[in-house]
Image (tube, rainbow, N blue to C red):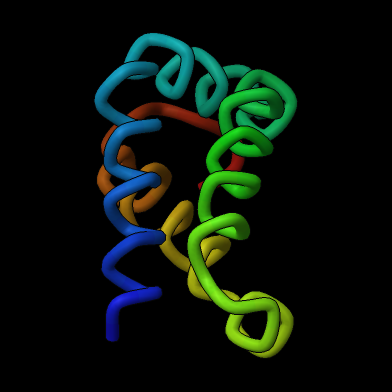
Length: 81
């Protein structure tokens, strides 16, 4: 599905350009605070490129953030896992 691929591409860019922030955010258990601006910017881009119906009825973007940004960093030491 195109919307899912778009969400994953945006999440991939967030991960690629914010590697150090992501690691630090996981280590300090404040990942979503640290990446707030980047995630919101990505969400707005995603929202602008998919239909309102898809945006409202799916969680593709949030799922992509977890799958592409957070899950690959499971090796980072943190209290959250």
